[in-house]
Length: 575
Image: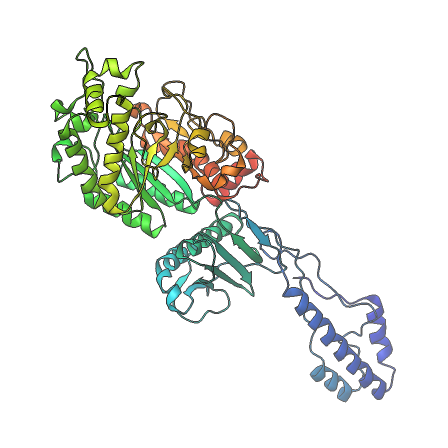
């Protein structure tokens, strides 16, 4: 801290003071008292105003008294006058001024930051996390304990806040995931209209302290651009442990991602224990207790888990103990993973599974799959699969085709899920153009590719009023072994090129469809499960996941270069 320095003029005034009368000396002492108080008040006013860019309170230059201001020692040589001066004139108070603060350096970057002057906030020995009074904030205990643990400070619960504390409160109106973080008077106050927003405010605080040691002075007002942000994991073809999945949840939470997709059934495996059909479960699988553990952690981190039992394709593990359900073509060949949708027994087993797992996964979203059904991946489905063509005509009339039967199948599965009140999704190649039977209008679309047979562009779905989630395989597909011209996605391409509007290839759809584009997710697929270990996968997705988080939260063009973004990811602990 800077000290007041005596000027040569002040020194001369001390010498001259020794020869003046006691009366004039007293007057001069009173002047020194007034001047000293004035300087102290000015210093306090400036010191309470703001912060440096890092929130560390870096000084922009301490003020000193002018050369004409009387020195504290400029008093009469008379002992009585010296005693009066010493008792009446306090020592000058040092002062600091602060540069205007900058926004906290976090991923994703905050939407707005109102700069201020002041030292910012640093966790100290007496700091603690407290919950604001009132019923609305009473449910923030989990959020409070977590951030207290992460910052290594105490958690005190619903008590009065004091200097150095972090205060959490549910208050105000606005988007459920919005929050405001105010740093003022050595205190952080994080508020939001919902618990999720308050939680995201604590993520900003955690990252800022990790990157710079402090949270800068001022006010952050932040909210996500897209409602759905996350990671989709294929645990069917490659098994991942509970610990691995939980570690991804924690990484996602720090990046303010709110959705984990679990694709747990495919040709290579069925990875969650079943009571209705235990015969289909792979030897390496998650118990329902382990899944509940994952779900409980996800709930505490404000992450929705979206399950997927893909059908009527990708069902190899389900069909294996039930070979009579296997679809066969006109030559008797059996396309892998395709269930025969003309059989009522096929519908029965899938509906059993849907109902069973709807009781386990109680989140608001469910993925029905519906992609890559082999019967529709040939040039002439009617000729190749005559039994399906016959079933289509029988159910939907003489002009019905195999695609109508397939759409009817998906609509039937949606009807099974209706009592559970889920928002249902399918992959984009599960909704077809033309035909007699139209897909349920409430089905949302996960748009992943334009490579499939009869590919439809995103605008087809958007113009029809469908809501889309971005899974663009050009940028967002992490496919183990890199088959079929896939390459591992790079964070740089996502960061510099992709936005939620880039749904297919590299071209963005018009901004007028913004309300129909719900968000975007990075997807891990296990086509060649042994190509990487689960730890290699975790390392490989870190920077792509950081980039996705940035682009779905803040629509502004990133201010950091890719190199700067990578450096920041390391500093905040997400890269």
